[in-house]
Length: 281
Image 1 (spheres, rainbow, N blue to C red):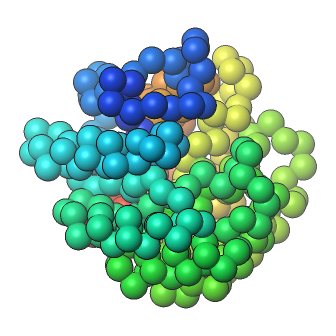
Image 2: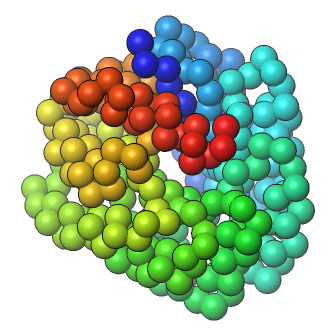
């Protein structure tokens, strides 16, 4: 079995941080801890993980950071790195990022740029300066944008050539969309920026609950891999967000089925090798 590096592991403990967006019921409600993750991933070959920020209340950024960096430091936990939350559009971000850049295990930062975030926020001067700083610090920035905003995401990457970027969730393609032509054009523009790699993740959450199959996901997976090339794509679970439509095992097994015709080398790149290299794990 190919070993897995999960490059998008969410965790949250509601005794530590506040998540304003968290629903009161459903699969995402309540805390989701390392113990829960261990149960979900048992037997799947997860060798290492990279934590992905969970859009906590801005006052809790440092609480989140300290919580996950303690997990990174724990040899009994598979977490080997963390992408922290922050607000690059604020002048205070430079000091915050510089402080955490010195901490072992910090790999980058993210701010979710869809939902209520105004369009083109990430092209404003302060935001661009902050992302350029990440490149100077040797850190990465995860791009999580609406599919219709992919061209603007590409502009940010072009404006920050010395910063490494990750495009989350196949550019947030909608599995149930009948026409993916606009998404495809956006993906081609982003992938043309050589400082961007792609995460094959997240898409199962937009599939039809209880009715999706791997064939529904395959066109998006294959097009993402075609755009970026098999040296620039990485697996990620997006757990527990994926559990709105699929268990961790169902998502992994679907992706293994979709890529079954790939060479062993390319499958290893997708599930393990590219992440180890990109995140310096």
